[in-house]
Length: 432
Image: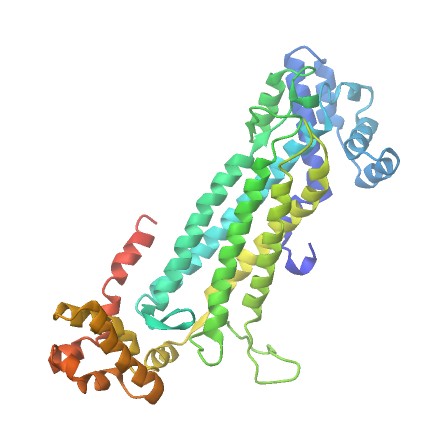
């Protein structure tokens, strides 16, 4: 991932030094467990912990010759540990180290992403409460439908990311498994207690059955979850982009002093952050299909998944971390224009109350089919000729024959559409 879209804490998880530190801990903890079984002498395990070091440049140099990253690491480790290093990696295979390490890295990444979501939830809740009753136009197919509130939009986003948090917690639990089962996963050359010991020390669960590798359905589920979260990021970003259009302008990304919107047009204030988030969401989703295709490996293992995961592990988590943090900043500073929202609400002459009139006519005895025809023909006059729906209805004898003028006017009360906002907010936020 390019530095432009990366943050230090997440990036550090995928740095070589963190990877080799995890490799070392896996090997050293395994040595401790081997001592308990009498497989290796205690002095050997002690030497590994005390003398164990690694040099990234030296590992790269060895790998250039051996063409094997784990062997290169073990060779360099032995250069520091000395003769006792012959007891390292007893009964283990490379996948024991690689897969367990990846599990640790993905759980570390998940912990950062969970914190990111918590920060976003805080911002969404604050803005939802702030604009709980800021009435705005609800749209379906991009066309005016019925009134909502800006607060309900934020609350909807909040509920979605609360679900995403639960999904990510479950995905973290699913991916947090340790595999120390040896070649083809039979434990023929290593006792299962070694795996249990390493799992406990590394904060993982044991993999119930591995085929030399941890089953890749776990990884597919993890990256698919990241893809869902990215899609939620895009949903919020897309809504903001639409609402910032000049013809709408109900909300706007914060535009800082000295910021420039266009190299050619000085007047421009563009939704660049949410456009960026839309693009980043596409990138994260792009990693889901390769993760799904990694599930089917040949027999007990092959390494067709390896090259994929070396890309998507860092890039998916780094990108999503950046996107969540950026979205939190957008929400935190988002400028809301209630006057513009009210202006747009009144733009179409009260058409937004058409359903209420339809229902009133049915309550007054008209069939639904007849009521629909009556309201629609008056609504079409507003579309084609302008004016107010209420005025057109007052001139229609099919309406006034069933509804008196005062009752008809009452049907155009905006408070009708916000009477259950409190109920919705309690459903979303109670228990927080």
